[in-house]
Length: 461
Image (tube, rainbow, N blue to C red; front, side, top):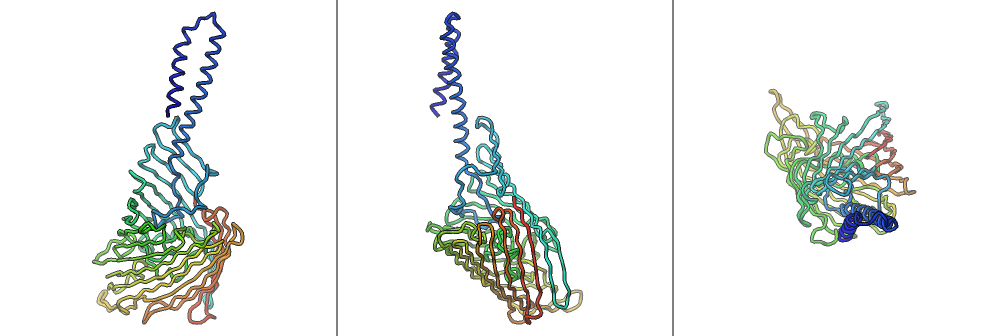
């Protein structure tokens, strides 16, 4: 900062001295003019250097694959920026003064940051265009073209970078619930000022099973397993405390504890109830992008995450605990959930596996509706799935998955199995990719299954 001040002083002295120079001394005047021009050029160069230095002190916004579960996870070394981003567009106020800085880059969206860094806003959007063909035994075939997901994401920080906000809206048909067509999916605040006790408040994904918490934008098959589609805990409104680096062990140990309303997203409960969740995760080789499927970075060292969670939803009236339809009998019951999971990445190979269980306190619910007695079974079940993928090239991946869902007791859930695989073309990572997969879905009898073919294009900008 001292050099520009000295240069400015010199320029001022020269400017004062110039009138005193006699007109007859033309050579001396020209020398002074040349010196003034040189000093001005140096001053302009120093101003530009200062502007770049100020810009460099402001870190670029951390990217998220879509719907983050954590606020403290550090990016992998292979993802750390090393220089000006290719395709990035940045604008800053002239001379580095007041105003806002704007940064735009494909895969990171548009970020606006205040001059005093007290506020930032990142805007991102994505959609998934999907083709599905079903060939069903004794029921004929079906073909569907749809926009499976259409999302708008707003996130940033307020007052301090330790206080962040996240909001996500969904606009496709399946982004909303059939009986409640509201676009709000996520809306929460996170305070990450304490390493061992971060706090998140609002509507969010319940920190239960990892494949559900992983953004639908970061999957390595067209969609999630049928097992977690039945047994996950989806979104709810509440508060959680968590850490991805408990006790400062280098990201080896993490946990999450949550208290939620228990009735799911965008719901107002008409009866008392609560959902309690506890999760622990061990990453023995340190933190990594465990909420992104596929090892696109071709991790040179093995990356492993082992986790387990338990949850209890008291007095819920929803068939799948926090989502799905409500019981026709208008009765309520308690539901207990358990999951264990594994995620491995190494040299382009990835493996993800989960085993889940949900058990209702009552096998059968009976109530009176309109003077008539209604009896219905609850949906106790357990299941597991495993999927593995390998990068054939840096852009092409092959993936396979097996899954099985089984009822518990007199459950309304039926036996289901899935087996299949797919191929992915990562044009620009998960931000622009083309996916295709095939699955055979069946229950009691192998011969009575359905053939399912899906092709999906995703753009996340």
